Image (cartoon, rainbow, N blue to C red; front, side):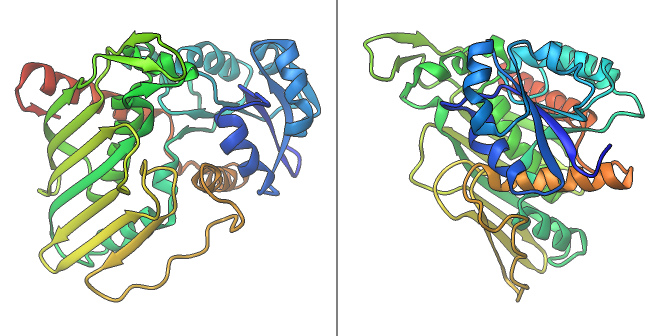
Amino acid sequence: MNNSIRVGIVGANAERGWARDAHLPALNALPQFKIGAISARSQALADAALKLFGAERAYGDSLAMVRDPEIDLIAVTVKVPEHRAIVLAALGAGKHIYCEWPLGIDFAEAREMAAAVKPKHHVIIGLQGIFSPAIVRAAGLLRAGAIGRLQSFRGFTSAAAWGEEVPAFNVYLQDKRNGATLETIGGGHALAAVEALIGDYSEVDARNSTLRETVRVTGTNEFVPRTCADHMLVLGRHEGGCVSLLEVQGGASSFPSSFEIKGEKGWIKITGTVPGTCQIPRLALEASFPIEPLPDQIAPALTGPPVNVAQAYACFAEDLQRKQKTVPDFGSALKLTLLLDVIDKASSTGQRQFL
């Protein structure tokens, strides 16, 4: 590699999207990276996004871009059903990969992609919430025994895309077959944070509920079926003995995300600074004992979606430069996918499941 890590972004769009709203400002804020190329669903869309993204080349064929010898790292920001083909092609071309979560539409796809990663590849799964300074600090305090043996965890978060109506570009999120659902996205990000804080689940019970079986497409009289859950309750026990309750509410919430951890010597609380999902806003940290102020985020000028994405990219850049592997990878994604499958089984059978 040259001094800059040259990134090819799959899923660039000048009008909207996670690549524009999160990856572009995050990468622009980090001198370790340079956007070398972008791709989109058509050459016209790619050309329209070229200037905004500041890339050198635009591709209407993402599989052609992953073979570009001038690109070091592929950022996969397209819809989940498209991940597999792009990830496998990128690995075959010897590229490093930042793939948005979920990795695949199901466990079989995630397992296939994880198995294709070779020692030469560096990969990261886009669970950016666990890079939040509040989560990192709290996890360190808990591991150091700051509140003694962990006893209980209570968490709440929300996921706006599964409310009473849905914009047209999010209709695909309502179909469980696409693998991008409240369970996998809202639930997956929250579950990753829970395990980062209090350890792996050892047993779960759950109720995944579809409270609204049809939803209106925003601005129209069209209604579409919802086949995924729009509300989750997960009751768990963790390897260290801590018990937990996590609620994931579909739709926009007037309440911020909140994680409360109680131990035998005190408590720690993590709260969103604005209402909404846990992986995007800046999180505040409180405790029953004095704690140092949180460090500044990697790129202090950023707000909203790019903040934790930039944190993740910065850690990934350090791994690449030091030739180490510390970030959550496709093995981490496979493990989380399995946990979601176990939670789904607990809900559908009404029986506690053991991991």
